[in-house]
Amino acid sequence: MILSGREIKKRLNGDIKIDPFNEEQLNPNSYNLKLHNELLIYDTPILDMKKPNPTKKIVIPKEGLVLEPGKLYLGRTKEFTETNNLVPMLEGRSSIGRLGLFIHVTAGFGDVGFKGYWTLEIFCVQPIRVYSDVEVCQIYYHSLEGEHENYASGKYQQNEGIQPSLLYKDFE
Image (tube, rainbow, N blue to C red; front, top):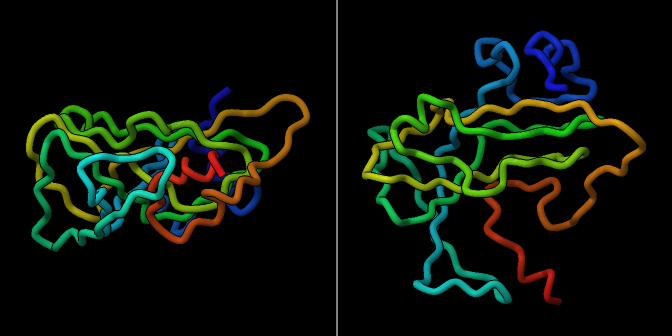
C-alpha cells in the first residue's frame, strides 16, 4: 500500500520526518522534494568501482546552470528525511521528466530506517537550465509487512550532503 498525502502528514514527526516541511509540497500520495544548490561531477574520464573517484563541486547560481547531455551530475534534496516502519521511494516529477531531465538513474528505492538527504543521479537528454529550490522529485511511502531491521549501513546513513558512490568499500 502507498500512503496518501493525508497519511504522510498524519505520520510527520513519527514514522516520517521531513525537514524543512512545507504543506504546499504535499500531494495526494507523495511529497515534492527540492533540489539543493550544490552538484558534484566526477573529475576523471574513467570511473573505477574499486576506488574512490575524485569529484568537483559546482554551485548552481541564481540565474541557473545549463546541464550537458551525456554527463552525470550528483545532486541532493534540500530536505533531510527520516523514515521508520515504512519503505521510502523516490521518483522524478512528470513535469521534470517531460523536459528530458532524470533525477535518478537506478537509486529510487530507499530502505526502512534511512536518515539523510537523498542523493540524486541527474542526467539530461538535451541541454537544460536547472535552478536550485525547484521541486524536482517526489518521495512516497510503502507500508512494510513483517518483522524488519532498520537500515544501518555506514556508507550513506546520516549523510551531510551529496554522496558519491562508496561502492569501493564493498571491496575492502
